[in-house]
Length: 197
Image (cartoon, rainbow, N blue to C red; front, side):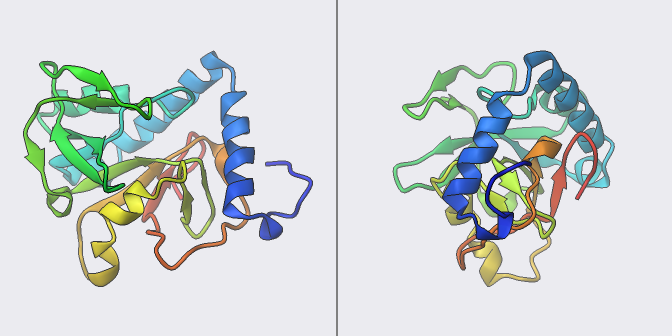
């Protein structure tokens, strides 16, 4: 990504703004094509094939479209759970299927209003949205810290094998370096249309 400052000098806030602007300017057709390539990479990955209980965000605006992943998971009889924002700035997860009614939250997120709940530590795979990422798989989200708080237990359990947190992003959201905070939860994988990091 082009920027007047060196990536090492930018704050998380600066990187977030630059990458959100980049993502918003991707033409719709290009975004859909890239989203399908990302979905194909996810669906063919061992992470996805081995997982049974998978959390997937419902896309909004210019985020990577996850519906191809969700529909393929349903075909494969996997259980899909969608995140719901809570007042504690954490996430809960409810099962998503064709019967669910989706409600738009105050933050503009589409969330299931019914469906079986699951505890975050019972998930096999969590596909997260992100605004920016780097080669060390540091992640910048929208700034609310929901994923960091929800999966903070992974820092206390370094040997935990699940859930695996994997980010979905367009290649142009990759930056040289993200200054990390002690509470940030690093991703194990990032899928883009070009690579799996």
